[in-house]
Image 1 (cartoon, rainbow, N blue to C red):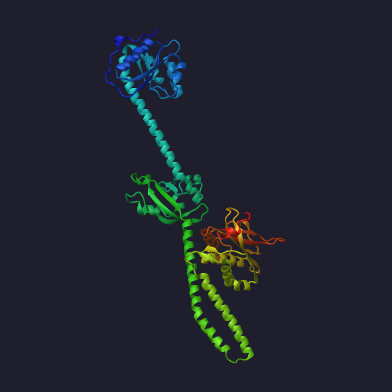
Image 2 (cartoon, rainbow, N blue to C red):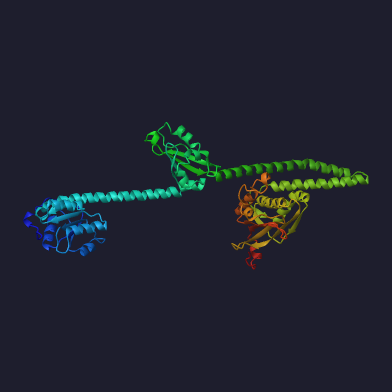
Length: 526
């Protein structure tokens, strides 16, 4: 049957009202007269439109290219070089969601049903074109609803992806469990913090209770019988994969309080308190050391009064007639008394804290430390070698620099239990990394040295090689002090082996503007 043309007499206006928006129509039609009548019919019914007519598959494919993708496709069932069913198959193969209306001059009910089963949204005959307008209204509404649904789903997926990235990247550990304590979600921070693999946590072998034994009790107490959805965070311990416990700040939240108790999910937020607890311990130990220092200074101050009286008494005794032996003993007593007086003066000077930085003579500080630790070195048969260069004063807190020097010399003494040599060296220097000028002090011993593993950790808080006698704070505090003075503290060490001497050198660099002129012509050296 030849294709039938649109009859202008049968085209009735089904809606003369205006319609908002602009409609892009792709018309698969070989008859330009029918295309004209169709366009006029749509415009009369309030559509503002751009109509593109195609007759072949290649023309249709070009018309589907962005940015002019049509809002709706109307296709004649029979064309000389193309067909409505072929056009329908083409649009379905492209994956585009565009409403498709089949149109024909004469189409049987079976053919219409077959077209709709193939994917067409509806069909209309050229003799009853009045049906086209309500069909377009309906399909455009439904297409718009589908697009909005897809956009909403895509926005939801994007939001969920952003939230998932946020949760995975945050430093807080997040565990979600069901009413039976089975873990249903664990973020990456839990793996990093506790050491469990994600697979082991989700397998059911590891439960919320096995990781955080106090979590369920906190939930039952604060959330189990109330309408609250979050409990106040509290400090507790969590069990790691290797069985050890770490201190954490734990927050508990109920994700679905409206659900039945058997269907509720619990979220546990875990913050690692290890560094905070270490810092608190450092503060406590530092305060204890400060108290001990103040006590030592107070005792030294109190000793000065009786020492002065004893000195005066010895002076008066020395003015009397005494046998030679007695005078010899008197001189020995005077020498020992002078040594005690010197120790008290050095102790007072050592623990006296300056409140402000000032020009400080490093050699005087070194001598103070040497005098304070001299008896230890004598007992252990340690020789102290001084190799002092010409150096200007440094602008520093003398009490803090004295503390650093005492830590370094004290460690060198500990490294030489059977005697040895400690070398103290000072001189002008230039930092090889930054080019800054300043003063370098090195403290070297010829002890057994340290392994590379030990050397890598010596500046960590609480790391000590001295067992229970060491606090593990000396070098850590020393580096903090030198950092505050914009300087550097580094260490090199070599373990003693057969035929190869060992030892350790600590190099302390403190910037000094006064050294700039004296080092103006000195090249940077490593």
